[in-house]
Image (cartoon, rainbow over all chains, first blue to last red; front, top):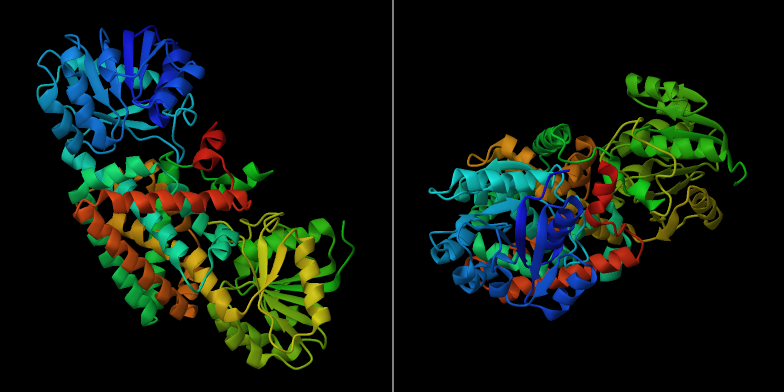
Length: 307
Length: 307
């Protein structure tokens, strides 16, 4: 088990991600004190009932006082407000990081407010589920998952190493990327899939020829996979859409262009074009399983879970 | 355990669905003889190695001789060829059914060839996984899943009852529907999700700004859910697209219209519109879980399966 890595960690935001970090810190003994902060009194109360930290405060400014590590886990649209609030209460040498799904925007929102004596290192653990809130977190969420850092030019190597070691202690694999490239990668592997899932569930919900109860009753034939992604936190995903606009619009344009091609092939009965695409995509799945990024159990092993 | 229901069952096609039916028939003792037929010598050999039936023949015409129940489990585009081949070898009073994902087309392909003394009752079990072939089947695949029948006008009630009882013995819940309505329902709950999944996996595979290895490496953040559907049998899905064209094009048009609305909301930063949709879709997921059509385990319980 790793030793204590930080004397005092402040967690700003205690939803699915924040509360999973809190559970791991506690289980692994990575900090002497863990101060938890949430704007919502209910959420903060729940965090205390779950004994996720050692103290609980509403004000982020108060939470960060004397902290050696500050982890901001809020919807990305709230990043600037948090940065503004905590800036002048940060102690010299503190590492400030975040877990936001978009990086260029978070940097633009937070970096200008960070004092020179603070190590601001943006990060993004690629982990989560469709659930949200402090009850949704669990220990081990980050195990085997990537955590991508998008360090600024003048980042202190020692601080970056220490932050990486922290995430590695949580079981993450760590990686570095340029923030703009990060935002493009995430636009295709995460943001577009969620947007498409939200969209198709909305379309199904609005049909006149097929009733909502039919959609629900027969959802097991494919549709239900999309509903999982479309059950994700609306605030988080609204903010992702607003804060990674350019990359998302670029990927959406590509997706729609490809869909028009497919639609035309269906209309004109071009079976060979359909077969070519439907065969090629099988290889991608195979590679993902080989890379250990998904389980190979048919139907995600739902038949096992059902029993 | 149910008694023997049929003296001789012929299974035409022994892929994921056919071989799952075979396994259930054997486990439950529903027939004295099970004749298995496949055009592919390799598949037939594998079925025999797996001891899925009591005899194995290449020719469908031979397989159906003296059968009381014939189940056609082939890609829907092969329905007419099978109907032509078996028609004059069917014994009077036999029940002929299928498992195809589109019903109007299968009826148009098969019904004209069926002699008067045959009970032709189209059916569609809503069950499956992304795997295919005789090794992919397993007992219990149909348990708790719907099987939809689209009987023709002159269907014999006794034959329909007997076929329903067979599927109920396999654990299915049975339902009846008009074939055209069936095709619309399936277009939205199954065909569109698969087409969208194939499309997005294709888009990701073709990008210049994000490499294929990045897509695979970081797929766990949403994308991998789509790759499961996009790993389904290419022949089956090509045929579905070609044989449910009208309903699929109708649903694709609605989907694209809704996506354009969403895209515009992203471009113009209309967070309220995004939030409204992203909240509404959560309820659909909740209803699906309440209806017992999916497990409530976060992330489909992959964290459990990983261990």
